[in-house]
Image (cartoon, rainbow, N blue to C red; front, side, top):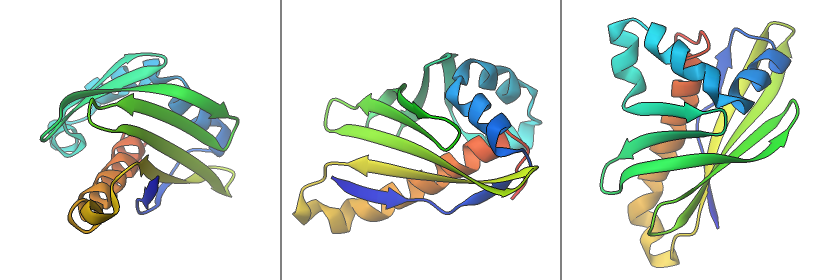
Amino acid sequence: MSKFTGKPVAVPVGRTELYNRVSNLGGLQSRLEALPPEALAQVGDVEFIDADSFAINAPGLGRVVFNVTERVEPERVTLSADTGVVPLNLILELSELAPDRTELTSSIDVEIPMMLRPMVGGKMKEAADKFSEMIGRLNGYEG
């Protein structure tokens, strides 16, 4: 598997609270709906389905549903998706910066044939960046 790590974002929420929010996705839909239109446009086309899953519309793949497959309190949540092409894991890692500030880093693990990595790698890195920003924006990050 290849791992593509996004840029970390500093979220103005304590690590335990942020972990509770991202490990139970059900509460994020109401946060999404409460965003102002300009912030909502930056988040993109996402739907939080229930406590364990969310969906995005990915260019070239269509609707992709991610399901929580691992929770390691309070430091990591792993979500998996079967895109129909390759399995994909999204890992959200949380590091405490201060009692009321957490660094969130998203990474994507995906099986990509060696010859396709140069063509796809940049897009996977960009997707990991966007996941960090999306989750961060839903939790007060203004980056």
